[in-house]
Picture 1 (cartoon, one colour):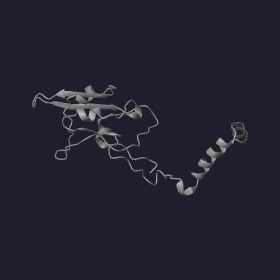
Picture 2 (cartoon, one colour):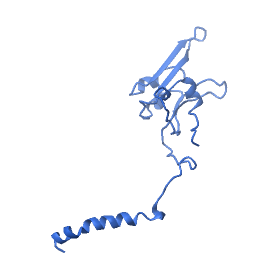
Picture 3 (tube, helix red, strand yellow):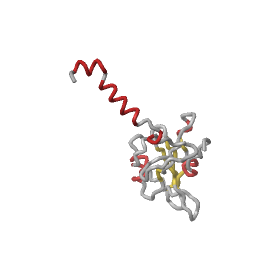
Picture 4 (cartoon, helix red, strand yellow):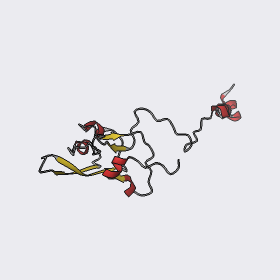
Length: 150
């Protein structure tokens, strides 16, 4: 078929539309009903951070070494500590994690020598304010709140 006739009859457009309409059949459509059906998350997915707790004494595993804050390329982790004069060890006083700037790279998790900081598979991190994206020690120990849309 000559080129001018293909352009006049819009053959390429019709061929493209046929491909589109062929895949529009309901058996090819895969829709998740999100709040009711939970999506499968990949095993290596890194989501919401969590400070792990020692199951024996109920205290956080964090030794306030500040390695996670040093390893973080975004400088979003702030660790506050006080040295205990009796035990001569650092005790964690404050721990803040700014999720609004986090790129979930996992460098903080890898830098922790005692596996106190962990990136979980929780992905519902939305909040209505920027202040809601800054998690303190209590929120990190409790984990993310359940979604109100479940």
